[in-house]
Length: 76
Image (tube, rainbow, N blue to C red; front, side, top):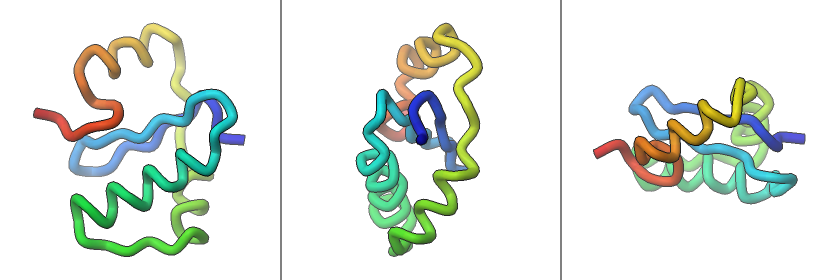
């Protein structure tokens, strides 16, 4: 459902859904909220946010995000 989509936090952190691993995507949203902002998102709230994720428009955009270190960790 979420493969190829990304959700970016206002702080710049981005979670990206790879393949068909929806559970990891939702857990990534929850983990970031908890660890970076001290917010405990329910699974339901994280799913609602995941549904608003935008498609990554191209493979190039995804590669640029990975190259810039945005995916999977905080911006340095």
